[in-house]
Amino acid sequence: MFTGIVEELGRVVAVEHGAQSARLTVAGPLVAADAVHGSSIAVDGVCLTVVEHDGERFTVDVMQETLRRSSLADVAPGQRVNLERAMPADGRFGGHVVQGHVDGTGRVVSREPGERWDVVTIAVPPALSPYVVEKGSITVDGVSLTVSALDDAAGTFSVSLIPTTLALTTLGHRAVGDPVNLEVDVLAKYVERLLRAGAVAPAGSAVGAEVAS
Image (tube, rainbow, N blue to C red):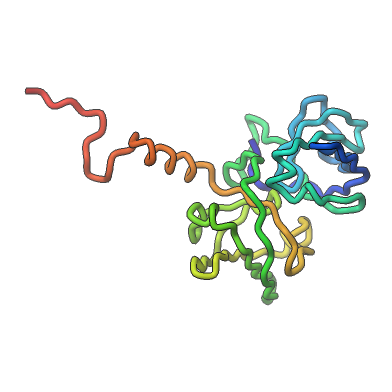
């Protein structure tokens, strides 16, 4: 599990494409320093498993499902990527619950510079739109952010990026038209699943209570 607090800007140094997969090698001295075979590292918000490492770089395999749902299908050598190691059990919960299971990609539709921040508006796929709520949490390229505005009619949401986010993550350089990885709040997906299954009763009703006769 991750929290969406990016630790390091890494750099893709090699990409090997297979018929239905890819292998990426990423330079990231901070996150690679204590990596072992099997470690989990989020790359632009995608949880990947370390298969090789040398203390400065690490290599991961990316399966077809991940390539289909994320922007990693188009990643190229030299590209900068957000990196975060899995949260230790005794670590601080800096962002929100992030699984590293990208739900799909959005696209940057506008950037509005502010006095000390940028407001970035992103088009969200219709299937993910119901899980995006104003003032709720969303993960964009692995960064835990708060939805500052929502436009259901346009199919977009906005986030406000503070100077630290602009300087230390790839979101400081994302241009209009660029794709971004999106992971919605997993709690919302569980609630929807339970409601669909009829496991959660409407408000005001008794759940699991037995009435004595």
